[in-house]
Structures are given as structure tokens and as C-alpha cells.
Image (cartoon, rainbow, N blue to C red; front, top):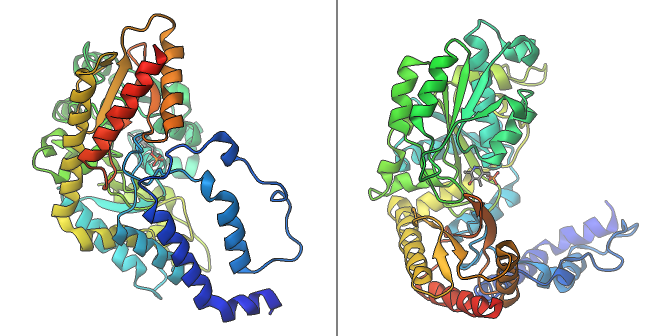
Length: 471
Ligand SMILES: *Cc1c(COP(=O)(O)O)cnc(C)c1O
């Protein structure tokens, strides 16, 4: 064994103790850590571009990373990072994530570990949490982008089936004309269409309702009637990124009765709201969807990378993802046959952080996070509406506040960018820019388990100061 490896093997306990020390330091300072470190801190330090010929051992490597780069890490897992849709990590999920690496299990069904069994049980518990019926199966993937990719891949197989074509065998060229319809597909679904060989141009945009981001089902019906007979996939939103708008799923289901189509529901973060009786009605009808995307690393607050792809079409899923080799077990139709159900072959024990979070906090704990985030988003929205210089671009639906600066003299886009730049410099709250109905806007998405009233007070203070500075 190389002497550095031998040394680290002997030093294992000290290495882990030291890592634990670093973790505790980081977590103790998380609430105060700037949400956006200065640009300079985000650069590679001199000498770190080269591959080392001689290693320095784990302790020295850890120390070097920490001393050089700890100031370049964002407090994005903390309570006031409202940019994008960014969850943190609850203690139970973080601890479990450590154990995922410590135990380094491969979650494909290899009959030498309990990992796949626990994954399946985790999926079952999630179905209970989210009120999804027994005919759904689910697989863990790395994020909602991959869940959308897998859902659309199964949908693509179904589209071919409508014409008696096995797309997995014959390729997309054999598919013939198809159409993908959506009012507000997330950009990751558009990317998935590219990855699937269907092509981004296959997406036809259906109008939204006049006053919201929701799909106009009358416009959809008109389009479906005019294109009857063309195999169709409809991409529904269950929580848009800008305004957390939910498409009307019961009406989509009624249309599907008359014009058969594959219904994919992107519920990356909105789906978690199904755990709360206050909000479950937003997801009414998703029990009948063909494929569903739910992220775990957003509102479930487990570390990256974790999402779940649900479907009621396990056989089609296996047609797409089955993996034949003399050294692998032949695919059989079972819901824990993960190697034959998603793009990956070998992969980490991805379910464990979710499993641990559900065990540690239960249905009620997850529900409390959701309801607290929603309550605080409303509080933030009310605070902004009552402050000079701000206006809401949309009502606060669920957990996202989408707002603009008002009474701006010059260019609105420039003012908005300067406002966000100012927030970044304060480091108290992170928001990200957007555009809503042609207006430059700012989004604050609340999905972190630690966010409390005090954070909204700090947020409003920082926003008001920055607004005053813009003039
Ligand atoms: C975040 C998000 C995605 C992409 O998810 P990743 O986990 O970042 O891959 C897709 N759809 C919606 C609605 C999202 O909010």
C-alpha cells in the first residue's frame, strides 16, 4: 500500500474527528454565514490547478481545503437563502447522508445489501406522506431534472405504443409525428426533450389563463380537438417556480378521458405540499397522473442529490431502462429493480437521508416545515406590500414571493439588478432575479426547515435598506 494510504488508514479515526470538527464549526456559523461570498472568494487559489504528484494525506488536504475555501462557501443551507428553490439539510438527513458515504452501498438490486429494500420502503412511506395511491411505483434519481427526464422517457415509450412502435428498440426516428403540450414547462423538461431525441421544437406552448401562469384548459381542448389522433404528452405544472401556480389537474383528467394523452406532472417542490391538509387540494387529481416528479433536496430538506420519479407504468419504464448483460441479473418486473428503471447503473444509497428524515420527524414534522414556510412567505409578502418602493407581481401562492421594485425612475431591469447586488453584498438574504409577464422581478422561495419569524424581520430590513440605496 502507498505510504500515504497506509498512514490515512491508521489515521482514520482522527480524520473523521477532524471532519466532524469542521462540520460543527460550519453548522454553528451557518445562520451568520454570508449567503453570497464575494466574487474573489469564489476563485481557485494559486497552485490548486495542478495535479499533485505526491499527495499530502487526508488531514493536510482537509486543512488546505478548509483554510483556502471555507470563505468561498455560501450559507445556502441556512434560513435566509431564498434564491432558486433551495432546501437545507435537517440533522437526521445530514447524518444519514454521512452514513451513505461511510457504508458506500450500491443500491442496485444485487442481493448483498438491504439498501434496495430500504429504498422501496422509503418510496412506500413517501406515497403515504404525499397521498399517492398504491399503483404508483417510484425510483430515486439525482434531482427533478432527472425525474422529468425519466418521466418523459416513459411517456415517449407510451407515445410509440399508441402506434404499435417500441421506441426503446427502434429509436425515435420510428416514432412518427407526436406532440408535447404545456403552458409553463420547467426548463429542465425542455432540456429532457432534447436529451430524449424528441427535440425542443416538439414542445407546443398552450396559452395560460389571462391572469395567472396556469394552463388555459379551454385553449388546450381546442388544440387537442384539432390534432386528435396525434400521440400526445401534456406536461402539467404543480407549482411553477415564479408564482407556485398549479395547473388544474381535475380538468386535465377530464380532457384525457376524451383525448387520450400521457399526463406528466412536474411537482418538484409543490408536490410536498400534499402532506398538509391545508394545501393538499392543490394536488387534487395527481393520483391519476402517468408520471410525477418530486424533488427531495428542496422542500424535504435532505442534502443534494435526491429526487423521486413516480409512475403508474412500471412495465413501460422497464422497457426503456432495462439493462442486459451476462454479469447482471436479468430484468424482472419488480419495483425495486432500480438498475432497470433509471439511467444509472451503480449508484449511492440515495434513499437513506429521506428514510432517516421521515423516521426522525414523521409526517407531522414535514408538515410543520411546509406550513411554517407558507406562513412566513405570506408574512414577507405582507411586509413588502406595506413597504414603500415594492409591489407584489403576483399574490403569494404557497411559499414563493414574486415582487418588483416600484416608483423606479430609470431602467427597471438595471434597478432590479442593483437591488439584488446590494442584497448579495449585505449577505443577509439571497434572492434571484426573474421576469414575470414581461416585468423584471425578484423571487424569494422559502423551503428551508430553519427559517423563522426573526429571519423575515432581518430580510425585510435588508430589503428596505437596499431599496433606499437604489433611490
Ligand atoms: C427545481 C425544479 C426543477 C429542476 O430540479 P433539479 O432538482 O434542480 O434538477 C424542475 N422543475 C421544477 C418545477 C423545479 O422547481
